[in-house]
Image 1 (cartoon, rainbow, N blue to C red):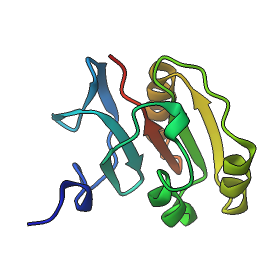
Image 2: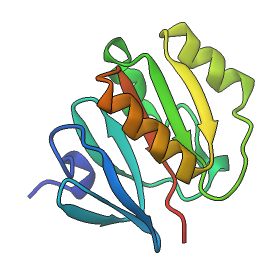
Image 3: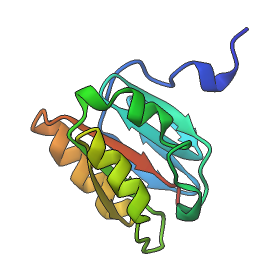
Image 4: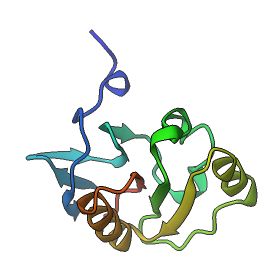
Length: 127
């Protein structure tokens, strides 16, 4: 049996239908906790606060960077200024980081995937 983190929740991208109460609804399912939405799959993401977002927590983004132009980071209810090192590391693989609270991040992500843009989202769950 594979560990939950070894398999995506959904093997494709999908708009986020709802969020709150510590989770998200998408693709006809719900998930409690944070999400990492990549162009090819949606994964559980163990981050619970923006301060935990770093290169290691975004390893799947770096691995898929050749298919991503923009990474939308939903920071929960907090405003977060990404560290310069993280921005530079993403810039080095040609990914633009755009951080905002989770609500606006979901709206932006949904619009961008609707436009078939090469976008990923790292979304911290909100209560």
